[in-house]
Amino acid sequence: MINFEYQNPTRIIFGKGSLEKLPKEVMNYGNHVLLVYGRSVKQNGIYDRIVEYFNQNNIKYYDLSSVTYPSLDCVYKGIEIAKKNRVNIVLGIGGGTCIDVAKSIALGAANDVDIWDVLSRKVSWDNLNCLPIGAIVTVAGSGSEMDGNSEIENTETGAHGSIGSFQKTYPTFAILDPELTYSCPWKLTAYHTMTIVVQAMEQYLIDTGDTPIQDGFVEVVCKTVMDSLRVLKNDLNNYSARANIMWASALTCNRILGRGKGADWLGGAIGGLIDDLLNLTYAQGIAITWPKYLLTCYKEHLQTMKSFALHVMNIDPTSKTDEEIAQEGAQALQDFYKEMGIATTAKELGVNKYDMNKIEQRINHLAKRNVISKEDIETIVRLAIGG
Image (cartoon, rainbow, N blue to C red; front, side):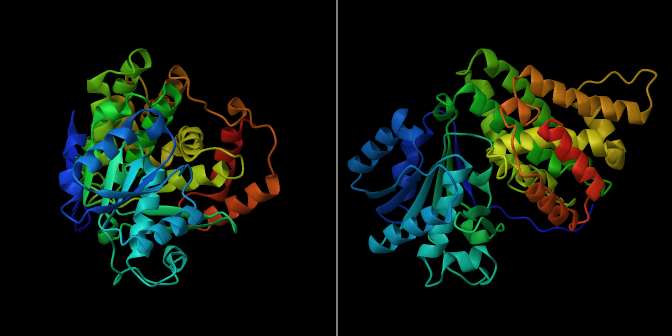
């Protein structure tokens, strides 16, 4: 196990009825709040409940609505609203997109600096101020509710920027009420749940050695969310299954799973290699590419993949070599995707046209990280597209 430091400042308020505690949490910082949300919270009644709580407690609220993509334009709009109205706290409501946007707004609104200069690493965030951030999760999977990361795209240039686990951009509190995810439809639930598996395994496939606690955490998280997803396939309002997935989402990205190990964070990078170019969501991109990565590179993580096969995928080891067990575990994960109705290729999602030159450019760029070979990346991409 390697040396590490760990601190997580996010206060988690978990369980049925947790939304009722929102006014008290907000008023710890003031009574002017910016709400950052997408479309579904107005459709499922969550927005109306929040507004009612605020009106009862004389909390003034301002809206940044219809946030469906983590774009720089949304961040700029939010910063303008926050500064104009002297907002005390920024509240992200939804999934990772809204919470990530809320984090960048909170940082940008507290400083006289172009937030893109921070996101693109031209300006260091180390000594910047940040407004308090709150999170209300209605789509579990990203883990943004308990980390300091914010991933934002400049849609004009196609460039991606990020804040990397800056302590001040961790939400000060996160409300995790499993009932708030009941309205999340099956397909969205399935893809986002498998995002949890990918992000957990990214902190698992690091052969540091002597990390049985961390590895055990990951295996329990993966097995639990997969079992819970099977339950939700037949009962979308099963509280226990929703609760397990919601808590797993928070744990997966709060950095506890990978402490003492490190992580290459390759899953998001490989998924991102194709999701923009093939017009897929982040969850779709990593869902498609991750099993292909495991099937291509399982030998490089042989003992870890063997453990995954035995303890998560329940592979029978009788009369099998370590390689056979590991390979069967990777295949079993892809078979689970099929069982859940999750696409395993872009072709299954209706993608038939793509610019191979642009894909090749992305492959060359990712290969420079020297995590896996260019040839392996090409194999993963070809299999993920459906060729």
